Amino acid sequence: MAEVLLVIDLQNGVCSENGSILDHLQELLTFVNQRIDRYRAAARPIIFVQHEDEGLIYGTTSWQLHPDLHHAPTDTSIRKTHANSFFHTNLQETLVDLGVKKIEFVGAQTEYCIDGTMKFAHGLGYENMVYTQATSTYPSNGLSAAAIIDWYEGIWQGRYAQVLSRK
Image (cartoon, rainbow, N blue to C red; front, side, top):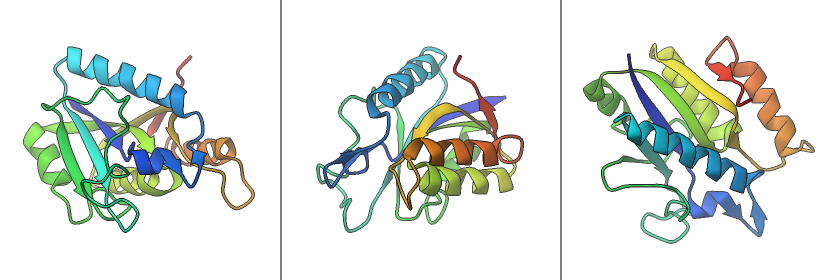
């Protein structure tokens, strides 16, 4: 079964916003790089998805991938303008061309682009997986980032993805 690592929105302007930093960012970057290295060693595809909007203008420092990521020129890049990474992009065509049946998700933000893309991928018939704490977000609406991440992992488990423990 062909498998891909989908790295969503780990961009400078997403990882750090108005003086705030994504929850557990350094731990997340370390884990994502471990996954990238493992996929690269197994010759499995890696796709980086980058969001664009008025705060993340294409080509700007904010739009660029976080400099600590193990990004390589051979990795595929997808530009998007919507929380759903499939919306008006060539992601579906890319996955079909690669023969992908299984997607591993990492990145940000848990409740927006990760959730939107994961649920859409599920609807398209992909087998989705995500490790615990492999996504991140900011505190919102009185909830801590950790509470939001835990909530979404609970929603995804057994419905939209297999949520795997990192322990």
